[in-house]
Length: 271
Picture (cartoon, rainbow, N blue to C red):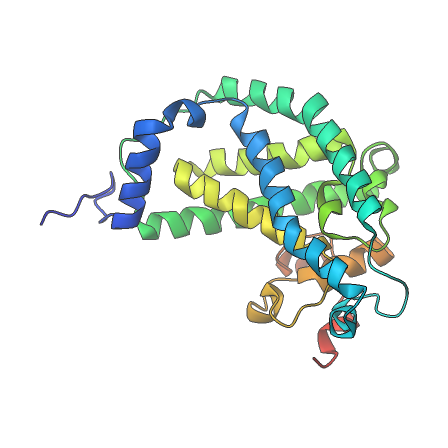
């Protein structure tokens, strides 16, 4: 049997090959839609928040779940009405600002679909490269927003209304900031030159990490416990508390390099 290869001569995984052939044959119009990135970002964000909505609901009746909250003992989890208010704010900003602007951005970059699926190696390399690049760009932009008072007041301050963040609040910010973050993620994939499958996986992981960072829980199975290079929810919770530390969204190396890293005491508490 002849195994198909990518344009770089690497063997394709059958699952990636089958997935890409399915997408190319029946979903090409959807892939080329300029409205896809914003729609995908919003739906992925909302769906990935659902497990933490369930945890918040369980927290009202389960002491074990409450003990995982980083503000255990300081009050109940966010109410359903608070979740709904946050959902409506985020949806409004997507519809009125993010969707039209990102549609224009995607029209200008003129997406070209490759003929072949990526290899597993290409997929992994591109996703990791995108995460590292986005982490660097976000760190720089986040740092500047905190250091320039006009930017903080007019763009970033709204996000810090949540002194104790929750999952859906990861995208509860000003329209300008929400748009800038989506453009940073789209630009990261564009600069890396991602295959569309790599880009989709990058955006999913990117969204999950942002949701987990804001979830308000220091879970025993959280990714930052498996990968020490990640800061996780305790790292970002400390940023929301003090605001002058921990500017990087996911990894901690930029905060270490710039002297803005502060370890959370939550990292050392027993589980």
